Image (cartoon, rainbow, N blue to C red; front, side):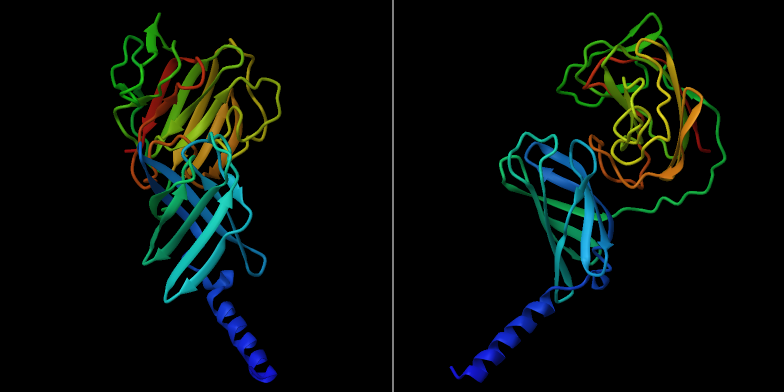
Length: 317
């Protein structure tokens, strides 16, 4: 081939590659937050994805899987072809029992994300997702308070997993997670609400309260430690309290949580530690990812022992 024609071929080839790789500004669909459902062999589980622009042309993000907290995505590789946006990223393991990266590949067409995510064996399993709702709720009119725990039995509650032994008991008027292993959820679901809970745990224990079954407010023995989104009072992996207001293990503590849309306020032992902050998305361990629907109050019971003597909820009217 003549030298001039060879040079022209190289230029045309380069232009062809440039046409496929698009800048972040040209990806209005892929940018944003998405609620995902992953179709694993053992049953569906929720996940969450956020894609944002960093600088001129780089796409980065965050991802929440079945377990753990939001983890950063250093780079989202994206292309577009005939109106379909395709993407790929890889992130290292967090709490999964795996040695390989978690790889997500997919496409965005007509408002729907579809693709695959690798399981612990490296096998791709399918998922789909839709854009997460803004949940921009106005301050509601509040109804009458409801006692979720009657002090006598588990009426109004049910274990999350039917195949796992339920270790929750009522002893001397206290709701006790005597044998950790199963979570406990309300049979009733809620939209916006105020929740007041009085709880106690032994030294080193770990639990949580899931709002609408999707957003975990951490309850853990972190007395005297630095405030962190993964520690007591934080919205797990997303929102960090302004201070650690925990009492020592073995003492009764009180937490008040107000959730309106995705805006949350947390008061721990009389200290306002999170004030009207927006929860970006579901946290690991959520029951599902339909953020626009009402959901239950879920008490995490698969980590450590914890006791509740009061659980009072004021719903919206």
